Image 1: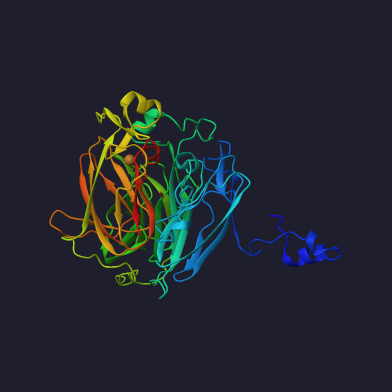
Image 2: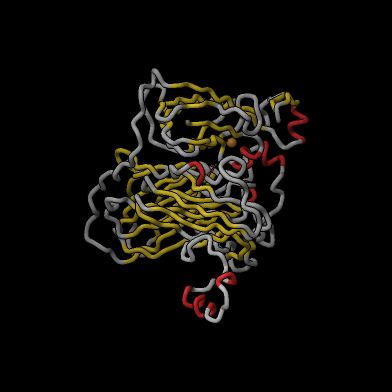
Length: 462
Ligand code: C2O
Ligand code: CU
């Protein structure tokens, strides 16, 4: 990078005759830059060429941004992509103006332009960042990274802490990112499913690790549309957080499903024998293949550590009365085999042909894309419950901005705090949360072709 340090700057400034010739400084020189630009990555095996990607700071994944709970994150976002962009800080309870949603919380950051993101970190946990403009293309080209907030009170005792960003790429036979971002078959079916899976940009991510090492693994599904089903081999332990939020009691890990955008924090002990490999396996119907591997070295200790305590909970307000909560309903329809005949588009009732011609094949409450009026308007502190009805033939990962919610089980039991929930075809899911964050917040499917294809609404908290 060729940015001048202060010393060089002063050196050059010596001899300047008038202060007016100095550049106007609109931000601190020391604010770190998050720079979206083109880059090259070694995604595929060595016999293939390297892949041209778009990445934060030119790499994929982008840099891990890490800070402590209670601190602030401050970054100048500079866009050197050929398209307008923005940064959305996924899962963080953030001030609305910093949420990065183009056309809602900010205007697009045009090529060559900058935007200053500056926000407080109220919650600890595993979060991530990605664009919120043409997301289905920009994320598929490699724009994403992890945002890790360390617990204020100190985290659990682990020997290692690793971030694993899982992605699913669609590459052509030259290992380049395949075009066809507007492909209506993808949009109306499961989304852009790829043909090459990476962890942290590697076809098979690997590390050496002594036996009985205790690791915290932070898994993030950054794929456009792929649902990962994961298993661990030679690793035993617990799920301790979901979507950044600690769960009240660590749960033994068996199978783990991660919809797009979902995260899980695992605490795992390496129990495979010395000389073996411990694996994270992605299951695909009858098959399973290793996406991350740990070569097991001589033991680090004699016996396994004790079961970890739960992580310290984040300061999320408790739900108010569910009886008196404000209710809303969200009917999801459209897509292939969905039988949708018409929907509102731009204030007009439009038949399926007109919708399809505009690339809008999914609707929420009979409207494609976000309408002028919110799904629900809540006053600050109110408890909301939203019943979401998946009246389509496809699964969807529904994501709410600015808040975490709980699923209300059929027996009334509350599920863990999440910001994204996977809904199977035909399923109805009711969620509840306290609207404690003022502003306009999106609620959309995180299968990015589905949200681009219309599956998006919003709520207002005042
Ligand atoms: Cu991770 Cu609205 O997105
Ligand atoms: Cu969807």
